[in-house]
Image 1 (cartoon, one colour):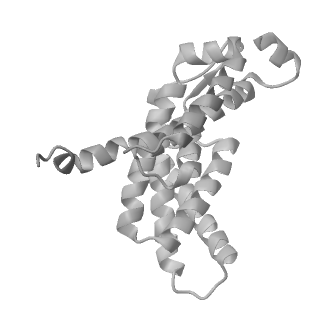
Image 2 (cartoon, helix red, strand yellow; image 1 turned 180 degrees about the vertical axis):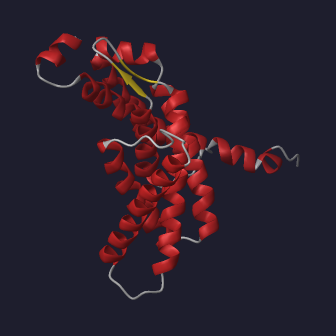
Length: 226
C-alpha cells in the first residue's frame, strides 16, 4: 500500500503525518470528553504534539519515525521559551491601544527576536544544537504564539499557565502514542484503518456520563452513604 502513496508523488514523511493527524485529534477528543483533561483547545495540543513529533524525526529511505527522547529534548525547551516570550511581549504591550492583529504581529516579532537571541547566546557559550528548528516548526511556532496571545487576552495568567501545563502533558501523551513504530508501520501498510476513527469519535460525541476527572473530584460525594 505504501508503494501506491509513494508512486503518487507524496513524500513519505507527509504520508505518515497525514495518517497520524486523525489519530491525534481523536486522542485529544477522548482525553477531553472521557478523561476530562483541560486544554487550550484542540488546536494547541494538536500543534504541540506535532512540534514534538517533527523535532524527533529520524528519517531515511526505509523509515520515518520520531524518537521521543529527541522530540522531548528539543521540544520542551522550545515550548517553554515560546510561551515565556509570548507572555513577556504580551505584558509589555498589553496596555497599548492597538488593534488585535498589529499587537499579535508585534508579539510574534518579539518571540522571533527572543528565539534568535537565545540561539546566539547558547552558541557563544558553546552549547550547540540547544534548539532544533526547521521550516515546519517555525510555522507551528507562529501558530502557537497566536493561540497563546489570544488565551492571555481572555484569561488570567494563573489559569493560562495551568491549562498550558495540561495541554503539554496531553500533547506529550499523544506524541508517545503516535511515535510507536509498529503503529506507524501498521498505518503505512493498512491506511484504511483510520476509518475506524469515525465510529469511535461518534461514540465519544454521544457520551453523556461523568468524566474520569469528575469521578475523582466528586468521589467523596458519589461514595457518601445516605
